[in-house]
Image 1: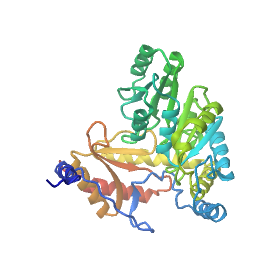
Image 2 (image 1 turned 90 degrees about the vertical axis):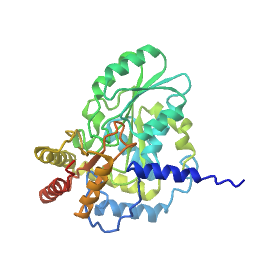
Image 3 (image 1 turned 135 degrees about the vertical axis):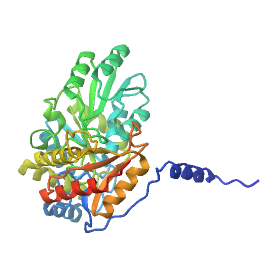
Image 4 (image 1 turned 120 degrees about the horizontal axis):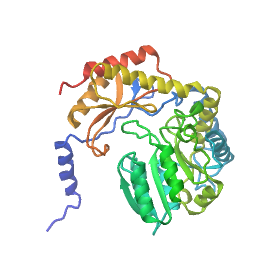
Length: 380
């Protein structure tokens, strides 16, 4: 009897097609052809001349790759410089740079918990947090979205070593977590608080210092944050920030740090250049928020359903996965790139267009984007 080990994939593909959930890769050209409201380049820095020049200089000086893990040959003076400046900018004692924001979340969750400990995770958290919880071997409880009382209940019932984890700004709807309330709960119950500030860095807080700085929580002894360098800083990579003893522990215990090749010098140099540029031009953070508010107000004024943005993500609801795909395709055909979120990327099963505000968008570009989204909106 013959055996075809991957025939089951064809069945999965048919089910995805029937549900309107097929995903495809679409390579973009080097020169932008569309007005970009789909990427996470919130501050418009990924093509900034200073940033690209810093990436090129770092590659010429340090080489194309890190050459090894950070503990072997993958650490450079550039990595250390970025870590010092990230920690100082965001208000934390120390920082550790990893190859991605995904790796940063896995590092923090697996190294700071373990068997017998408890993780309390928000239902709206990013997939990297979900995977980190699974890999941690800790007992994990998922609580309703943005519900500090539910977090308190679970921590109180456990009574031992515990950690609560949340996005600072949720990537689906762009709403912010109740960080002061969560911090109070964790402090009362003796738990650590881990905050993924991927969508807050560069947008929230004074000069873009992030959601924890905005909430007055940066540098707290029981608080750790993860960041990505691939959004507001226009580069690639991730970082964990917190007390120095936490960072020292990660260097010795976090598998996605110990066994992964270090961040490439070009990405490290680009992130450092972006961070320094943001220091010089702090108004970029406020501008990104202003653009997001303008998109939301103009779209909802015309009858579309959207969530008021707390940062730079504007989520506009679509009637179905198929309608969301058609809507995004029609926007693309009209010259505007927008994101399209469908199950299983959305925990509530509601499909959306996801528009990302950029600090460098002009008033004319905002008007064009709004007009295009309205003109192409599905009738049902």
